[in-house]
Length: 463
Length: 138
Image (tube, rainbow over all chains, first blue to last red; front, side, top):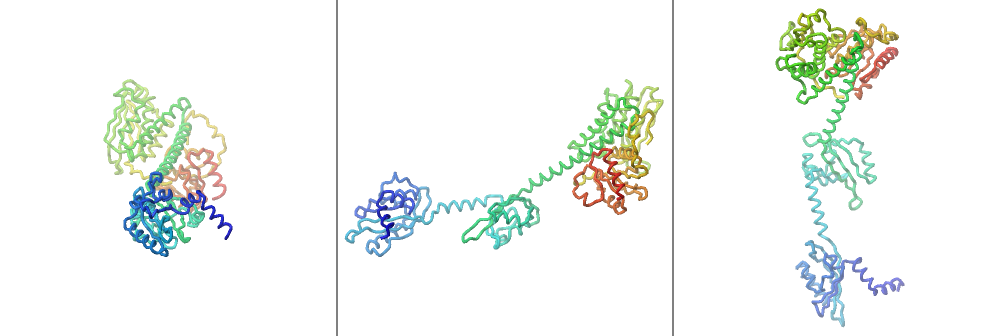
């Protein structure tokens, strides 16, 4: 006899040997007293395997007989009888037990009768769990959960195409599972990855998950952006499967794109505004008669530009602003009494691009009137009127008339609007494609501005 | 550019005028910027032509014999200046793009000879770019 066999025989006599067998070699033992058949010892391993507390058990045959499926118990009993009659007939069958939590386990139940003088006195048996349907149940529930997901969840092989295509994928791509089976899912959804397939394969080959945004198309051609995860898993026989989850992030992606576009647009506007202010300051200096009060004048013009900008940014002024609103706002810094400035005219739309030059012209007229004209005197009045007309060239224009009354007579003898004020008005009129006429009367300045109806401004160029 | 009486003396007037005799076409839809450019190049000795505020005006104003170089804003009230720029390239007239669209990706590949002067640009920056572009004979 091999010395280890001998040692093992001795070891099996030790109590710890039984604990080992009961917990590690199989799923429990039973030992039945055939002379008192109600007594049957069932090991701790046996009860643990079925989910019961061994300490609560009484080791009665009825305990297992209540848990076994009746038809399986019948088979086992038949086999037991045959084995008792004929030792060469094996006691060996699969039986199903109910577990403590209502599940089912399938057990291989084997046993041998211990005989005295050929008469069976005891029956020794063991259990081996073959299949735990509780695990099956969870698998099925998990599988059902995949169907609940609004993400597209798919499994496919690199050579055989789609094997599993959940309802989320059907809904997302408008492609039923039956049509997807066997197809390459990325061809099917016209996937455009932002990296090469070579790079993706390298990541999968390294056993890692590839994650990235992918442009795809539904069956009817709608473009989707998905956040995609792909992982390669090994299945039986060294075969591999690819598992893929696509989440539709089109809305989020579009919102981000819009934000990026708006940021670029804002950036462009700010740079343009800096450039305009730069031009304004340089022109103001170049044409100033004197530096005295120049800073105030420049600030007043920047203020007019800032107000015009704010007006163009009002949500209701997406494409146009009402002329009345524009004129009133431009004159706010100059109105002394309620009756000083009268504003009257039709409701007419001014294109947002025209807000700044028109505001600057009105600002210059009012500045000039405050310094030299009607707004300098307590009795002075200014009226601003406008209406729609057809001019001599047949153009439809907005004719805006600025007229001053009760300016101090000696102040009206010579035109006082000179230098940059005039230049700025000319430049702004140029921007509006408008004609500007100024006339000095005893009452003050009369200024007529004919602005052609602007075309609707187009959107800015995409940067 | 006649200076009004008593205008403050500006130091630029004493500086050399590097662009004497050069004809500079200004295309810019913001007139405050446009007229400042006109004056800036005028001060530098150039004959400033324009300003053209729209694409149509740019084509109308343009005279091959009267243009040594062009300063182009890119976005003219929502219309791209590129068709005009392409016309200039065909006639070998150098271009300086003066724009807030500083990051237009295809600008350098589309107009390889052009200079780019992002807004807001200093007077010196503009004049230097124009001078060096004229000097290289492009």
